[in-house]
Amino acid sequence: MKPAPFCYAKARSLKHALELLGQANGEARVLAGGQSLIAALNLRLSSPRLLVDINGLADLDTIDLDGDRLALGAMVRQAAAERSPAVIEHAPLIVQALSHVAHPAIRNRGTIGGSIALADPAAELPACLVALGGEVEIAGSAGRRRVGAEDFFKGLYETDLEPGEVLAAVRVPSATRASRYGFGEFARRKGDYALVGLCAAARASGDKLQDVRLVFFGVGLKPVRARKAEAEIEGGPFEEGTISALADDLDPLEDIQASKALRTHLAGVLLKRVVQQLSESGS
Image (cartoon, rainbow, N blue to C red; front, side, top):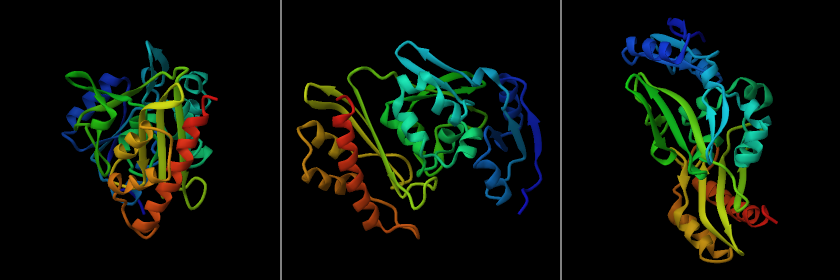
């Protein structure tokens, strides 16, 4: 199929991009890596009047340590983030997750900001951002604002971005010696979207884990925190009974790929594996 007719404009700067979006009265889409958008255009799942290309905006293609937080510009390619010494050192969970995102050719074009802004509930990066307690920086005509990751994701492909705004960057707390991370997912084939996935972060305190954040993806309309399971893990050593807490935390979707029962079972398997990673990652 071919996309519906649209106008195209290449932004010269972020300010120019915001001006173009403002003139389109909500009928524009931003083109970053385009790995999901182009397919949606061709299938006519999206039919914008204007496509605003932000490729080439150098100020959105940076990786910087901002105090105790790592800032990744929206246009940082996923492959560049995966290889970045700064991301490897300060946000290793993101590196773990990126190795599961599609295939190298996709990651060479796909962007950090594009994946976050799309908010696909089966994607790895939105769940990572929530697990790390990160935030999203949004640019608009009135200036910039920051939104916590848990508040940014609203529902199925729905975020806190308003018409005329651009996701400019994401920020995550820099890893410390006490930081612990875990990641796992089940997919039918390597590179496919996950049937179920889990991103986890915690802080080691002696032989216990504190500030545990368990974020599942592929089970709901957005990243889902397993808060009861988090409390169980913080309360003491992992026990098989902890898996039963997922029954209160998760209500997995059912589709042609997997039943609710299968996703619930796989979530329990991942929980056990990932908690083991959290316990061992500092040893």
